[in-house]
Image (cartoon, rainbow, N blue to C red; front, side, top):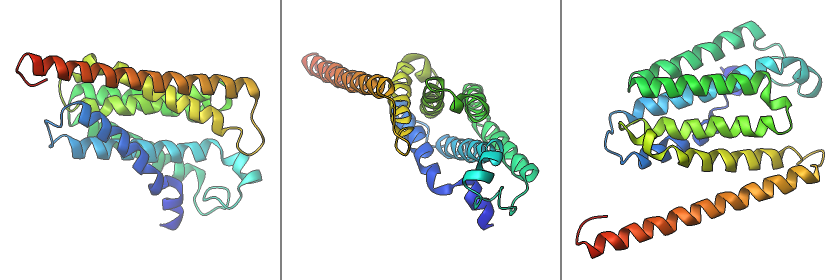
Length: 218
């Protein structure tokens, strides 16, 4: 059980739950019955993805992190792969219980996660963007709680994508030292995110003022 928990890293799953909760708030909190399924879906997708990541990294971990569950021999790679695949499948099924749109977004998340685990993380610029895509899609997953919300508010996912891509790129240099071009690009992306959030806040304030002028709820 301890080795299993080390594989799925339950403490990190809270970050995925936060994405879905944010998306659910964008959707207007109008279908509380959908929320448990979406939370289960994102938790399973995250846990399955991170487990499969350890499967792909098992040879590297054997040299650099031999204490981990797979290289230490406490969990066989084949079993870890089966656990990861089962969790990802469970996440897609849970999302599909909400709607076809939610199921489709969950499939997109699964594909993005597998792409990152197997290939994207080894690429300097593709890796951070790939990680940002996973997070942006996770935000959209929360929006699927209400019909039509994704089509209207999908640009919000670009803010999440950009922010996570910038932070991921910066974090790669924490131990061995980063490269200046990467740091410059990441800093620029963070500025873009702040500008986008400020603009959205300004537009919301304008809408509220306009609503008050018309004597209706904004």
